[in-house]
Image 1 (cartoon, rainbow, N blue to C red):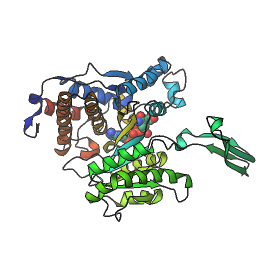
Image 2: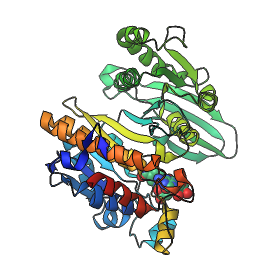
Image 3: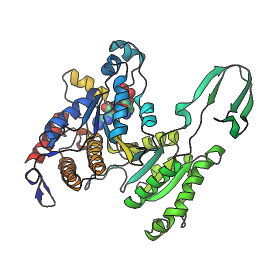
Length: 420
Ligand code: NAD
């Protein structure tokens, strides 16, 4: 492999990667990452400064979930995290794995532990291959709030009063948020809150990323009907007008939106995502909308394997904590095929982009120019080798069709190219 005329392996000497957290998960995605670590990373990179946490169900069960708490604490301390997909076990999986207690999704604890601001989800593009969108599509999904943390109860006929009590009663009296009559025999009452303190941080991250990628920014809500969503839009617009509008105008990125930041209603956004296949846009939205819309983006762009998923939080010292993962799950069906001895073809691109992103961020946090240079050289070569495998028809079968590589062949092709 030649990158900018340089033979990769011969142009680097083994280097020590700056500290980061590596979280392993389960099934096919774990198996594939083990191959990649053994064949692409370990031959060239000394990873002795990385901290490893095993978030398999077995390990979480055996440690009474201490391993998850330790992983979150390490992530907050170090600031750069790679995470493989994990399983949040169903009752059936609890029984089949012999787990002693239910295990919750690790995501909530991570988002809280790392002061999660946003989950950035972007399309991945392989130069020379057209996927769904021609140019990048960027998403900023608010990492907190909404339906995910809702409290709820099944109720019958009656009345509901939702009252807010200020933390300090000196600062004000209780406020009645809502009072309503429930008229059905069977209903569900749901209560949730929507934090706004970190929307300003989200706005800065979003607009800076849109500017860098040269894409048109949109803010997506359903505020016309859900009046409480007005606050999100207002904060985004204030930050935009005060800090970014001039730069976007200068870059010619507001021509389609009449020189202003444009708001899109979320149902209109679902349609535009299918129509705007030229790409070149970014959307910032609430938590649940972001969850749905980014799955739609993944489908238009051919596969969840071609979408990044990075949780961005903030350390107390202001440095950004970044957790990088693929947007797909553990790819359980291929794992079961693998266990049956059948051939599989798992596309590792999403996980690889995540791993390389976490290595680059770890180097940036280390603030050591040499570490940044050697890490970036390795990650660029690795990425180029993966792209080259796809371009030369040796990609996995989701891209290359039935003639494409198996999971193991793909890893070997890239390894040979990298170490040539
Ligand atoms: P999945 O993303 O693992 O798979 C969905 C389908 O897409 C499967 O048919 C799979 O073969 C295919 N697929 C996905 N990624 C692929 C890739 N890179 N290459 C080839 N094919 C790919 O989702 P699922 O089957 O619904 O979930 C499996 C497990 O993953 C569940 O236990 C779920 O809880 C977990 N999960 C974890 C995360 C996470 O940790 N971030 C996210 C989603 C699901």
